[in-house]
Amino acid sequence: MIAPSQLSDPAVRAFVNAVNAGDQGAFHESLTAGATMSDDGSDRDVTQWAEKEIFSSRGHMDVESESDGGRALVVSYRNDTWGSMRTAWRFTVTPEGRVSRFETGQA
Image (cartoon, rainbow, N blue to C red; front, top):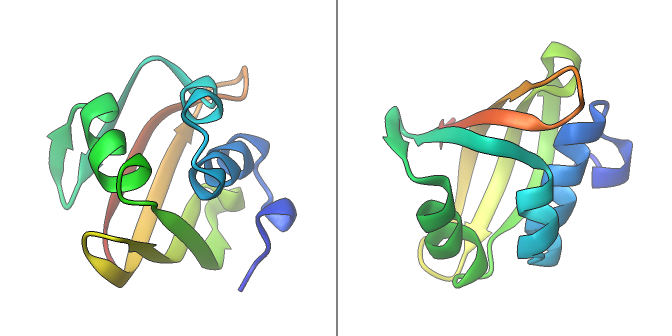
């Protein structure tokens, strides 16, 4: 596992830390205004998805590996709804250092 503090990309590091802390404010701060996302290839509303899949179900990311300069992760993701699953995450990061899009799905 890779400790979140050791992740290469600062924006992705902030995203993972916010998820693991259950910190909605920090999560939304890690994103641009109007950020988008997809789950298993289907676009979702970021706020609704995060509430269901992260915050109300105590989501947690254990990072197994990173690539693409830290903008692609393989994660053991768990929450109270689905249990644990191996997932892939890809992030688009702006020059200002915030996530403008993330995509997740089973790895």
